[in-house]
Amino acid sequence: MSETQQLEHPRPHPARTIVYMITGFVFRLVQFVLVVTGIAVGVGTAVVWVGFPILLATTSFIRWSGDRERSWLKTMLRVPLPPVERRPYEEGQPLLRRWMVRLSDPTTWRDLAYLMAAFPLACVELAVGIASIVLLPMAIWVTPWLGWLHGELGVALLGPNRTQRLEQKAERLQASRARGVDAAEAERRRIERDLHDGAQQRLVAVAMSLGRAKSKFDQDPDAVRELIDEAHSDAKLAVSELRDLARGIYPAVLGDRGLDAALSAQTAKSPIPVDVSVDVEPRPPAAVETTAYFIVGETLTNIAKHSGASEAGVKVWRTDDHVVVEITDNGHGGAEVRPGGGLAGLADRAATIDGVITVVSPVGGPTVIRADLPCQW
Image (tube, rainbow, N blue to C red; front, top):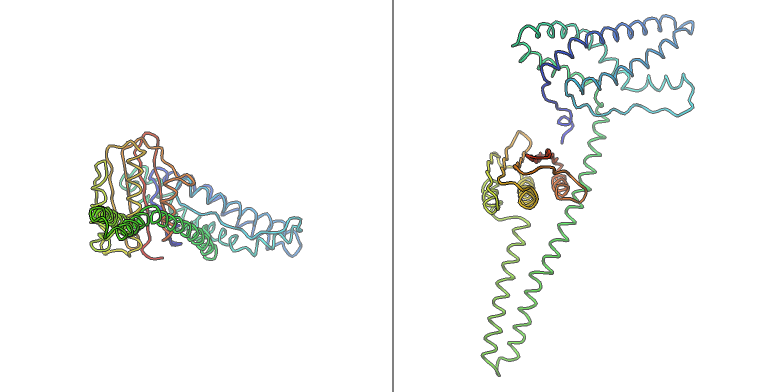
Protein backbone atom coordinates (compact mmCIF):
# COMPACT_ATOMS: atom_id res chain seq x y z
CA MET A 1 0.00 0.00 0.00
CA SER A 2 1.13 3.48 -0.67
CA GLU A 3 1.91 5.90 2.10
CA THR A 4 -1.19 7.95 1.38
CA GLN A 5 -3.43 4.91 1.50
CA GLN A 6 -2.06 4.02 4.90
CA LEU A 7 -3.51 7.25 6.28
CA GLU A 8 -6.92 7.17 4.59
CA HIS A 9 -9.87 7.18 6.97
CA PRO A 10 -13.66 6.94 6.60
CA ARG A 11 -16.09 9.64 7.53
CA PRO A 12 -16.79 9.54 11.28
CA HIS A 13 -20.17 8.81 12.84
CA PRO A 14 -22.30 11.98 13.15
CA ALA A 15 -23.10 11.54 16.86
CA ARG A 16 -19.47 10.96 17.82
CA THR A 17 -18.42 13.92 15.71
CA ILE A 18 -20.91 16.23 17.42
CA VAL A 19 -19.66 15.13 20.85
CA TYR A 20 -16.09 15.65 19.69
CA MET A 21 -16.82 19.15 18.39
CA ILE A 22 -18.62 20.35 21.51
CA THR A 23 -16.39 18.83 24.19
CA GLY A 24 -13.25 19.46 22.16
CA PHE A 25 -13.71 23.20 22.31
CA VAL A 26 -13.03 23.22 26.07
CA PHE A 27 -9.79 21.28 25.67
CA ARG A 28 -8.66 23.39 22.71
CA LEU A 29 -9.29 26.59 24.70
CA VAL A 30 -7.29 25.34 27.70
CA GLN A 31 -4.47 24.10 25.47
CA PHE A 32 -4.30 27.31 23.48
CA VAL A 33 -4.26 29.55 26.57
CA LEU A 34 -1.64 27.49 28.41
CA VAL A 35 0.65 27.13 25.38
CA VAL A 36 0.48 30.78 24.30
CA THR A 37 0.87 32.03 27.88
CA GLY A 38 3.71 29.63 28.60
CA ILE A 39 5.64 30.61 25.48
CA ALA A 40 5.07 34.35 26.00
CA VAL A 41 6.01 34.33 29.69
CA GLY A 42 8.89 31.92 29.17
CA VAL A 43 10.46 33.95 26.36
CA GLY A 44 9.85 37.21 28.20
CA THR A 45 11.56 36.02 31.41
CA ALA A 46 14.30 33.95 29.81
CA VAL A 47 16.76 36.81 30.28
CA VAL A 48 16.64 36.27 34.06
CA TRP A 49 16.64 32.43 33.76
CA VAL A 50 13.14 32.14 35.20
CA GLY A 51 11.75 31.54 31.74
CA PHE A 52 13.68 28.33 31.08
CA PRO A 53 11.70 26.17 33.52
CA ILE A 54 8.49 27.69 32.13
CA LEU A 55 9.53 26.90 28.55
CA LEU A 56 10.58 23.40 29.58
CA ALA A 57 7.18 22.79 31.20
CA THR A 58 5.41 24.28 28.16
CA THR A 59 7.35 21.98 25.80
CA SER A 60 6.38 18.93 27.88
CA PHE A 61 2.74 20.07 27.86
CA ILE A 62 2.80 20.47 24.07
CA ARG A 63 4.11 16.95 23.57
CA TRP A 64 1.65 15.51 26.11
CA SER A 65 -1.24 17.36 24.44
CA GLY A 66 -0.16 16.07 21.02
CA ASP A 67 -0.27 12.47 22.26
CA ARG A 68 -3.71 13.01 23.82
CA GLU A 69 -4.98 14.51 20.57
CA ARG A 70 -3.79 11.47 18.61
CA SER A 71 -5.65 9.15 20.97
CA TRP A 72 -8.76 11.36 20.89
CA LEU A 73 -8.79 11.48 17.08
CA LYS A 74 -8.50 7.69 16.86
CA THR A 75 -11.31 7.15 19.35
CA MET A 76 -13.84 9.75 18.22
CA LEU A 77 -13.15 10.38 14.52
CA ARG A 78 -11.73 6.96 13.57
CA VAL A 79 -8.52 8.48 12.23
CA PRO A 80 -5.95 5.66 11.81
CA LEU A 81 -2.92 7.61 12.97
CA PRO A 82 0.21 5.43 13.02
CA PRO A 83 2.48 5.82 16.05
CA VAL A 84 5.11 8.55 15.73
CA GLU A 85 8.72 8.16 16.69
CA ARG A 86 10.13 10.96 18.79
CA ARG A 87 13.80 11.83 18.79
CA PRO A 88 15.37 9.80 21.61
CA TYR A 89 17.72 11.10 24.27
CA GLU A 90 20.17 9.26 26.45
CA GLU A 91 19.27 8.34 29.99
CA GLY A 92 21.04 10.46 32.59
CA GLN A 93 21.35 13.49 30.32
CA PRO A 94 21.03 16.89 32.04
CA LEU A 95 17.57 18.41 31.98
CA LEU A 96 18.65 21.27 29.72
CA ARG A 97 20.15 18.82 27.21
CA ARG A 98 16.90 16.82 27.13
CA TRP A 99 14.97 20.01 26.47
CA MET A 100 17.26 20.84 23.53
CA VAL A 101 16.65 17.37 22.10
CA ARG A 102 12.90 17.93 22.37
CA LEU A 103 13.17 21.32 20.70
CA SER A 104 15.16 19.80 17.82
CA ASP A 105 12.52 17.10 17.34
CA PRO A 106 10.27 17.97 14.34
CA THR A 107 7.38 16.13 16.00
CA THR A 108 7.33 18.70 18.82
CA TRP A 109 6.86 21.54 16.33
CA ARG A 110 4.21 19.60 14.44
CA ASP A 111 2.34 19.11 17.73
CA LEU A 112 2.56 22.85 18.35
CA ALA A 113 1.31 23.65 14.86
CA TYR A 114 -1.70 21.38 15.36
CA LEU A 115 -2.58 22.91 18.73
CA MET A 116 -2.41 26.42 17.28
CA ALA A 117 -4.53 25.48 14.26
CA ALA A 118 -7.03 23.43 16.25
CA PHE A 119 -8.29 26.30 18.44
CA PRO A 120 -9.74 28.56 15.69
CA LEU A 121 -11.10 25.42 14.02
CA ALA A 122 -12.68 24.40 17.35
CA CYS A 123 -14.54 27.74 17.48
CA VAL A 124 -16.19 26.93 14.14
CA GLU A 125 -16.81 23.31 15.14
CA LEU A 126 -18.51 24.38 18.38
CA ALA A 127 -21.07 26.39 16.42
CA VAL A 128 -21.57 23.56 13.92
CA GLY A 129 -21.88 20.98 16.69
CA ILE A 130 -24.53 22.98 18.55
CA ALA A 131 -26.44 23.66 15.34
CA SER A 132 -26.26 19.96 14.42
CA ILE A 133 -28.15 19.05 17.59
CA VAL A 134 -31.14 21.01 16.24
CA LEU A 135 -30.73 20.68 12.48
CA LEU A 136 -30.84 17.03 11.44
CA PRO A 137 -29.65 17.56 7.82
CA MET A 138 -26.56 19.35 9.09
CA ALA A 139 -25.89 16.50 11.54
CA ILE A 140 -26.17 13.89 8.79
CA TRP A 141 -24.28 15.56 5.94
CA VAL A 142 -22.24 18.57 7.09
CA THR A 143 -20.90 17.42 10.45
CA PRO A 144 -19.27 14.14 9.29
CA TRP A 145 -17.49 15.94 6.44
CA LEU A 146 -16.17 18.60 8.80
CA GLY A 147 -15.02 15.85 11.14
CA TRP A 148 -13.32 14.14 8.21
CA LEU A 149 -11.50 17.37 7.33
CA HIS A 150 -10.38 17.72 10.94
CA GLY A 151 -9.06 14.17 10.70
CA GLU A 152 -7.11 15.13 7.59
CA LEU A 153 -5.54 17.98 9.54
CA GLY A 154 -4.61 15.51 12.26
CA VAL A 155 -3.06 13.16 9.72
CA ALA A 156 -1.01 15.99 8.21
CA LEU A 157 0.30 17.42 11.50
CA LEU A 158 0.08 14.60 14.06
CA GLY A 159 0.91 11.69 11.81
CA PRO A 160 4.45 10.58 10.94
CA ASN A 161 6.43 13.01 8.82
CA ARG A 162 7.55 12.10 5.32
CA THR A 163 10.80 10.51 6.47
CA GLN A 164 9.03 8.31 9.00
CA ARG A 165 6.36 7.31 6.46
CA LEU A 166 9.04 6.34 3.97
CA GLU A 167 10.84 4.32 6.63
CA GLN A 168 7.62 2.54 7.58
CA LYS A 169 6.89 1.86 3.92
CA ALA A 170 10.39 0.45 3.43
CA GLU A 171 9.89 -1.84 6.42
CA ARG A 172 6.55 -3.06 5.05
CA LEU A 173 8.05 -3.67 1.62
CA GLN A 174 11.00 -5.54 3.11
CA ALA A 175 8.66 -7.74 5.14
CA SER A 176 6.35 -8.36 2.17
CA ARG A 177 9.25 -9.21 -0.13
CA ALA A 178 10.61 -11.68 2.43
CA ARG A 179 7.21 -13.33 2.69
CA GLY A 180 6.98 -13.35 -1.10
CA VAL A 181 10.33 -15.12 -1.38
CA ASP A 182 9.18 -17.71 1.16
CA ALA A 183 5.92 -18.22 -0.74
CA ALA A 184 7.78 -18.61 -4.04
CA GLU A 185 10.17 -21.11 -2.46
CA ALA A 186 7.25 -23.14 -1.08
CA GLU A 187 5.63 -23.07 -4.52
CA ARG A 188 8.87 -24.26 -6.13
CA ARG A 189 9.07 -27.17 -3.68
CA ARG A 190 5.46 -28.10 -4.40
CA ILE A 191 6.05 -28.14 -8.16
CA GLU A 192 9.21 -30.15 -7.68
CA ARG A 193 7.36 -32.65 -5.47
CA ASP A 194 4.45 -32.96 -7.92
CA LEU A 195 6.84 -33.56 -10.81
CA HIS A 196 8.81 -36.15 -8.87
CA ASP A 197 5.80 -38.05 -7.52
CA GLY A 198 3.58 -37.73 -10.57
CA ALA A 199 4.69 -37.11 -14.14
CA GLN A 200 8.29 -38.25 -13.58
CA GLN A 201 7.15 -41.64 -12.26
CA ARG A 202 4.77 -42.01 -15.19
CA LEU A 203 7.49 -41.26 -17.71
CA VAL A 204 9.83 -43.73 -16.00
CA ALA A 205 7.12 -46.37 -16.28
CA VAL A 206 6.70 -45.53 -19.98
CA ALA A 207 10.43 -45.93 -20.57
CA MET A 208 10.52 -49.26 -18.71
CA SER A 209 7.50 -50.59 -20.61
CA LEU A 210 9.04 -49.59 -23.94
CA GLY A 211 12.35 -51.17 -22.92
CA ARG A 212 10.65 -54.45 -22.04
CA ALA A 213 8.67 -54.31 -25.29
CA LYS A 214 11.88 -53.78 -27.25
CA SER A 215 13.50 -56.84 -25.67
CA LYS A 216 10.47 -59.03 -26.53
CA PHE A 217 9.77 -57.55 -29.95
CA ASP A 218 10.80 -60.70 -31.92
CA GLN A 219 9.86 -63.43 -29.42
CA ASP A 220 6.41 -62.48 -28.08
CA PRO A 221 4.36 -60.02 -30.20
CA ASP A 222 1.30 -60.31 -27.92
CA ALA A 223 3.31 -59.30 -24.86
CA VAL A 224 4.85 -56.44 -26.82
CA ARG A 225 1.35 -55.22 -27.71
CA GLU A 226 0.30 -55.26 -24.04
CA LEU A 227 3.46 -53.41 -22.99
CA ILE A 228 2.94 -50.76 -25.65
CA ASP A 229 -0.69 -50.33 -24.54
CA GLU A 230 0.51 -49.95 -20.96
CA ALA A 231 3.15 -47.40 -22.01
CA HIS A 232 0.51 -45.52 -24.01
CA SER A 233 -1.79 -45.32 -20.98
CA ASP A 234 1.04 -44.12 -18.74
CA ALA A 235 2.03 -41.51 -21.31
CA LYS A 236 -1.54 -40.12 -21.43
CA LEU A 237 -1.63 -39.99 -17.63
CA ALA A 238 1.72 -38.18 -17.60
CA VAL A 239 0.40 -35.62 -20.12
CA SER A 240 -2.73 -35.12 -18.01
CA GLU A 241 -0.69 -34.61 -14.83
CA LEU A 242 1.63 -32.15 -16.58
CA ARG A 243 -1.41 -30.26 -17.89
CA ASP A 244 -2.85 -30.07 -14.37
CA LEU A 245 0.50 -28.92 -13.04
CA ALA A 246 0.76 -26.21 -15.69
CA ARG A 247 -2.79 -25.10 -14.92
CA GLY A 248 -1.78 -24.82 -11.25
CA ILE A 249 1.11 -22.54 -12.22
CA TYR A 250 -0.85 -20.30 -14.60
CA PRO A 251 -4.23 -21.35 -16.03
CA ALA A 252 -4.53 -20.87 -19.78
CA VAL A 253 -8.05 -19.44 -19.56
CA LEU A 254 -6.77 -16.66 -17.31
CA GLY A 255 -4.21 -15.55 -19.85
CA ASP A 256 -6.56 -15.92 -22.83
CA ARG A 257 -9.87 -14.57 -21.52
CA GLY A 258 -9.11 -12.76 -18.29
CA LEU A 259 -10.19 -12.92 -14.68
CA ASP A 260 -13.95 -13.04 -15.25
CA ALA A 261 -13.87 -16.21 -17.36
CA ALA A 262 -11.19 -17.83 -15.18
CA LEU A 263 -13.09 -17.28 -11.93
CA SER A 264 -16.35 -18.44 -13.51
CA ALA A 265 -14.69 -21.67 -14.59
CA GLN A 266 -13.06 -22.06 -11.21
CA THR A 267 -16.18 -21.50 -9.13
CA ALA A 268 -18.18 -23.86 -11.34
CA LYS A 269 -16.10 -26.71 -9.87
CA SER A 270 -16.88 -25.73 -6.28
CA PRO A 271 -18.96 -28.24 -4.29
CA ILE A 272 -21.12 -25.38 -2.93
CA PRO A 273 -23.00 -22.73 -4.94
CA VAL A 274 -20.90 -19.62 -5.54
CA ASP A 275 -22.21 -16.30 -6.86
CA VAL A 276 -19.55 -14.51 -8.94
CA SER A 277 -19.35 -10.83 -9.87
CA VAL A 278 -16.26 -9.48 -11.66
CA ASP A 279 -15.69 -5.93 -12.92
CA VAL A 280 -11.99 -5.22 -13.43
CA GLU A 281 -11.84 -3.09 -16.56
CA PRO A 282 -9.32 -1.98 -17.63
CA ARG A 283 -7.60 -5.34 -17.34
CA PRO A 284 -5.06 -5.40 -14.47
CA PRO A 285 -1.47 -6.68 -14.77
CA ALA A 286 -0.93 -10.43 -15.11
CA ALA A 287 0.63 -10.71 -11.63
CA VAL A 288 -2.50 -9.19 -10.07
CA GLU A 289 -4.80 -11.48 -12.05
CA THR A 290 -2.81 -14.54 -11.05
CA THR A 291 -2.74 -13.56 -7.39
CA ALA A 292 -6.49 -12.86 -7.35
CA TYR A 293 -7.21 -16.17 -9.12
CA PHE A 294 -5.29 -18.28 -6.64
CA ILE A 295 -6.60 -16.36 -3.61
CA VAL A 296 -10.15 -17.13 -4.73
CA GLY A 297 -9.29 -20.77 -5.45
CA GLU A 298 -7.57 -21.41 -2.13
CA THR A 299 -10.27 -19.57 -0.19
CA LEU A 300 -13.07 -21.57 -1.81
CA THR A 301 -11.20 -24.78 -1.05
CA ASN A 302 -10.92 -23.77 2.61
CA ILE A 303 -14.61 -22.81 2.69
CA ALA A 304 -15.65 -26.20 1.31
CA LYS A 305 -13.43 -28.07 3.79
CA HIS A 306 -13.78 -26.14 7.02
CA SER A 307 -16.56 -23.53 7.09
CA GLY A 308 -19.73 -25.62 6.92
CA ALA A 309 -21.14 -23.04 4.51
CA SER A 310 -24.03 -23.76 2.16
CA GLU A 311 -23.26 -20.88 -0.21
CA ALA A 312 -20.52 -18.39 -0.96
CA GLY A 313 -19.98 -15.26 -2.99
CA VAL A 314 -17.02 -13.85 -4.90
CA LYS A 315 -16.93 -10.18 -5.83
CA VAL A 316 -14.01 -8.61 -7.65
CA TRP A 317 -13.83 -4.98 -8.70
CA ARG A 318 -11.23 -2.42 -9.62
CA THR A 319 -10.59 1.05 -8.24
CA ASP A 320 -8.16 3.53 -9.77
CA ASP A 321 -5.05 1.71 -8.58
CA HIS A 322 -6.27 -1.45 -6.82
CA VAL A 323 -8.09 -4.69 -7.52
CA VAL A 324 -10.29 -5.68 -4.59
CA VAL A 325 -11.23 -9.34 -4.09
CA GLU A 326 -13.98 -10.11 -1.57
CA ILE A 327 -15.04 -13.68 -0.73
CA THR A 328 -17.96 -14.26 1.63
CA ASP A 329 -19.62 -17.39 3.02
CA ASN A 330 -22.46 -18.17 5.43
CA GLY A 331 -20.49 -20.70 7.45
CA HIS A 332 -19.93 -20.93 11.19
CA GLY A 333 -17.15 -18.28 11.20
CA GLY A 334 -14.27 -18.14 13.64
CA ALA A 335 -11.59 -18.00 10.94
CA GLU A 336 -8.39 -16.17 11.79
CA VAL A 337 -4.90 -15.78 10.44
CA ARG A 338 -2.62 -18.26 12.20
CA PRO A 339 1.10 -18.79 11.48
CA GLY A 340 1.41 -21.63 9.02
CA GLY A 341 -2.34 -21.73 8.37
CA GLY A 342 -4.25 -21.38 5.14
CA LEU A 343 -5.11 -17.72 5.66
CA ALA A 344 -1.47 -16.95 6.44
CA GLY A 345 -0.64 -18.54 3.09
CA LEU A 346 -3.13 -16.21 1.39
CA ALA A 347 -1.51 -13.24 3.12
CA ASP A 348 1.91 -14.40 1.94
CA ARG A 349 0.67 -14.74 -1.63
CA ALA A 350 -0.85 -11.26 -1.56
CA ALA A 351 2.32 -9.85 -0.01
CA THR A 352 4.32 -10.83 -3.10
CA ILE A 353 2.78 -7.81 -4.86
CA ASP A 354 2.42 -5.70 -1.69
CA GLY A 355 -1.23 -6.68 -1.24
CA VAL A 356 -3.10 -6.92 2.05
CA ILE A 357 -5.52 -9.58 3.32
CA THR A 358 -8.28 -8.62 5.76
CA VAL A 359 -10.35 -11.27 7.58
CA VAL A 360 -13.65 -10.56 9.35
CA SER A 361 -15.09 -13.77 10.77
CA PRO A 362 -17.12 -13.52 13.97
CA VAL A 363 -18.16 -16.76 15.63
CA GLY A 364 -21.41 -17.82 13.99
CA GLY A 365 -20.49 -16.16 10.71
CA PRO A 366 -20.64 -14.81 8.15
CA THR A 367 -16.99 -14.70 7.07
CA VAL A 368 -15.60 -12.03 4.78
CA ILE A 369 -12.10 -12.32 3.35
CA ARG A 370 -10.91 -9.27 1.44
CA ALA A 371 -7.73 -8.82 -0.57
CA ASP A 372 -6.57 -5.37 -1.67
CA LEU A 373 -4.11 -5.88 -4.52
CA PRO A 374 -2.25 -2.84 -5.91
CA CYS A 375 -1.91 -2.55 -9.66
CA GLN A 376 1.32 -0.58 -9.25
CA TRP A 377 4.17 -1.41 -6.93
